[in-house]
Amino acid sequence: MSRALVVIPTYNERENIAETVARVRAAVPEASVVVVDDSSPDGTGYVAESLAAGDDAVRVLHRTAKDGLGAAYLAAFHWALDRGHDPIVQMDADGSHLPEQLPSLLAALETTDASGRPADLVIGSRWVEGGRIENWPRRREILSRWGSAYARTVLRLSTRDVTAGYRVIRASALRAIRLDDVHTRGYGFQVDMLWHARQAGLVVVEVPITFVERTRGRSKMSPMIVVEAMLKVTGWGIAGLFRRSPAPSKGFVGS
Ligand SMILES: Nc1nc2c(ncn2[C@@H]2O[C@H](COP(=O)(O)OP(=O)(O)OP(=O)(O)O)[C@@H](O)[C@H]2O)c(=O)[nH]1
Ligand SMILES: [Mg+2]
Image 1: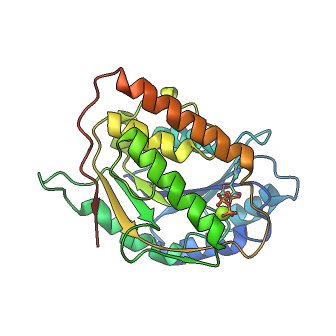
Image 2: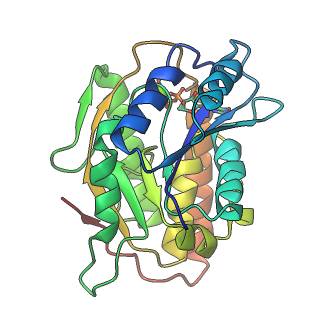
């Protein structure tokens, strides 16, 4: 039987991982959890193992070195598909994505677009009506909004929040996306997935979330990660001009 799987990538999240996993288990007890840890020097992997030891629904994937968020997710996606999980949830470990909002994201998979097709991919969105951010400096908000607008325009996406990391995706949609073609390892991975979703003609729905900036642990965001994402988006946009691609999927906002 298929079972929802919540994937939580971690790098140095020792102070956050136990609370995040506990809140996920409480909010969606029917879902399994996998923590994907890149041998965090702070011992996050050991903390995750102790959580797994006390709960059959929690597993840990240990990777040998820090290899980026995208690489961690791709490994977890293959792992999830091999085990028949459906749907698959992407969630940060640092408390930014509220586990309590996951039931509404999962429910939004059932919303249909104008032609009656159910959603393949649900985005927990900061930039649709009802979306909120807590504790972000103004310049961080401007950078994120501007980055989303740039990628949306260049890639002709209809999604408002293209870098959002809180997502639910059907197993069938992961199979429809050629994961071997997704090469972005850093922050641009989320945009890369949307770009592939668009090319696969998937139905994308956005649900407003409240995003809470981390209060513990350190961000892994860096100027280099932003630059990598911008350059990649520009490259995909130029490549897209020379390729016939399907009409933009009509993104819509669920309740
Ligand atoms: N496995 C793995 N996880 C990572 C890696 N880089 C980041 N993460 C995790 O991915 C999630 C998002 O990373 P953050 O550092 O919070 O990035 P962010 O949300 O863009 O930045 P902040 O808003 O400043 O927190 C967190 O759970 C991180 O621990 C990585 O290389 N490998
Ligand atoms: Mg974060």
